[in-house]
Picture 1 (cartoon, one colour):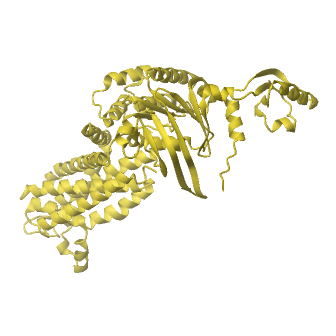
Picture 2: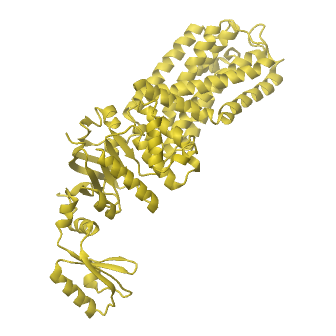
Length: 306
Length: 253
């Protein structure tokens, strides 16, 4: 039995400019114990898919199960199996950290849960904040509480929707160590993130969404191996020639240019020389997940058949 | 397990208003006392409602019931809209709680708030006129039913409203007129026939009339009629609230 299964999930929203097809027949499943990444640009449908999984949104058609329980007809059992860390930094301003966690436990029918709550607080570096009101916490601390709230009922499936957006390095480390430990203990993890190096490091398998459709679904290693591309990374103050600029990624002074294979590397360098581009700190390396991601997002036609 | 979830939500909703009780209990008690001081003082010698019942004595149960109704409504409606607007309703939406659990917890906590404020108003106003308890069971029945109905109505308003001003409109254009035109400050028998007939279409009138019956043993209409109207209204409003919750109206897109 898969931990999570999406079967032909579709969802259409009525938007200001006609209907928006947020999910267009998404199907894939996640096995128990997997660390699974869900990637895609903004608006690809990642959060909608997670909302359908958590029961926050109802799919227009298709079926979703968590540990075999249908999220609509068996919602109580499905939600007990699921812990969702929402993307938005939300909190209840009336309560302290411990009160919030006790209340969340109670919703799941757990009255005496303080041993696990203490463990969560310690693991997430919140022990000294237990009796502090939520309002008084910094953004990073509130984010930790969100993670703790999602885990109070020890769900077998954990969903993290961009948990590291705007989060400092220390919290990222704490969070990933903790989540990796839970994954080792057998929890299934579904992660959406914009930080592709995180996905590359953590996820065994990855699905990529584009305009509500799955455009790639494979083991992370296979996705990386599937590309023979080489990346040239260098710093420059000069403008790239138009033939390279179209496919280059430029971040400040750093430019990354793709070469189809090793032989093409020389051709790229020749074009840079011809254009008189002065290059510093040149590195040539294998494509990473970000390159694969961009390749897939740019390469797959998004148009639907008429 | 199921009961524990509903019980937790109920306690959370009670704690939520209790933590700010100065504002949620203290303020409405003060408002009711001000009404009593002003209207009681001005009208005491001018208005005769029931035989042998002074105006201040007559007014107290009306003010108590008005406080019960308004605060029951305020509890569920303000809690829901705040959670919707701040986004923390997601913590509840992700739980296995059924629509029945949501309903009993929100309405139950609203009743606690309404009855707490009502008791507070009663305890303070008792010093202005010695109370009578002619048929005390009516007091309890109508206070509980009225609080429950307004708690359920607050739930509907909280689900429906997307913004605080929509909530204010619901309160100012529906709840306030229905409360004020229900006979809190007067007996509807003193009204011209048209307004009297109109008042009889207002379920709030039956709540206050039945409630007052418990104190004085006298009322504008039979308490059994009032019980029938209020009971039916409560069932109808509850059915709508449950239906909206089950459908996830405006909370599950």
